[in-house]
Image 1 (cartoon, rainbow, N blue to C red):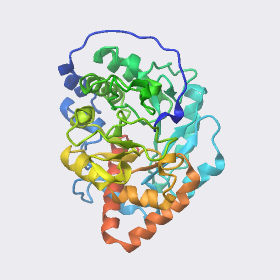
Image 2 (image 1 turned 90 degrees about the horizontal axis):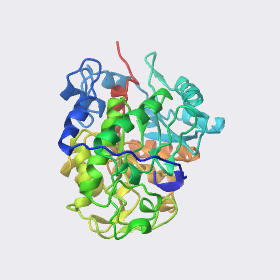
Image 3 (image 1 turned 30 degrees about the horizontal axis):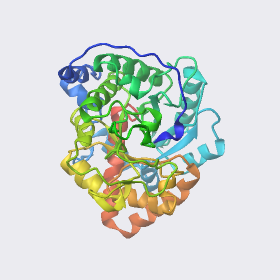
Image 4 (image 1 turned 45 degrees about the vertical axis):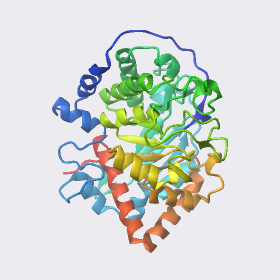
Length: 411
């Protein structure tokens, strides 16, 4: 998401010192139930633990995720490709029913809530109780939100800290930020969430600053250079890994060089970023550390693919992100529901074009669009064996991430 969740929060700034090389050790500390430290880094971030299959790699019926996949109906599989919003403070039961009717496998808690940890946990538990079952076992929901800090913090109230902005977090040492992020992640986990759509890995040049509509205007950047951003976005993700909550690098390939906000503006263009720009550094660093999710922006990057928005671009997703940068996890879209940047594209085409470009999980803050989106995907699957095969791999990546989050079990 970009800044439509923005609101000011009071914050305190703490300072400490930590050298960047310690990051690998920080990630290694995030172990999973007796796994070795090195293995656990990848397991928490979405690479396979024992019995799970890596996103984007061959699968066999012996893996848990594959067994779940094979037991699913086509509508259930298609539902895994979508994340629909539920208002965190005033959930709409009609829209929740849409998510259930269309087997939607992931939920985004939107809006603003001061309900606190316990009441949020009750909401999430109710949503999880309605998740699909396959072969008698529930396939849990990925439940996410925007919990960045500063003006972008969806969940607050008893049990949730008031998180400072990324600008303030960027003034801390990576060690301090990692520790604080682990605490914030623990709060989300206590509330039942397993995925955060953060950290922001965008680099806003100092010369642009607050003139950058989606990021700089709301103090969402960790710094003005890749060298400043990377260790902090990595530390934020490492803290979440320590608490066993999945993190998301966003908004690839970066919204730091634009002026318009894709939430509220059509035709947002980046005419600066290339496939070799230093601003890609924080994404590259996070991917090397094992990032499980990457969010794709809705802007157009004229020096990468001038014809298509990034979210609809195979050049951006398949060539740059997957092939060149080696990302094997889940590719999630920025909002394909209400964002003005995609308003001119029919809802069904938004979903189909994103998946055809190599995306895995289509996010819409408007659940009413899901019927049209799923129908369009099912129609294209029936028409194109190549598209169907691509979609099947996306479902497997999502299920592999769920396996790592403990949302599916076998035997």
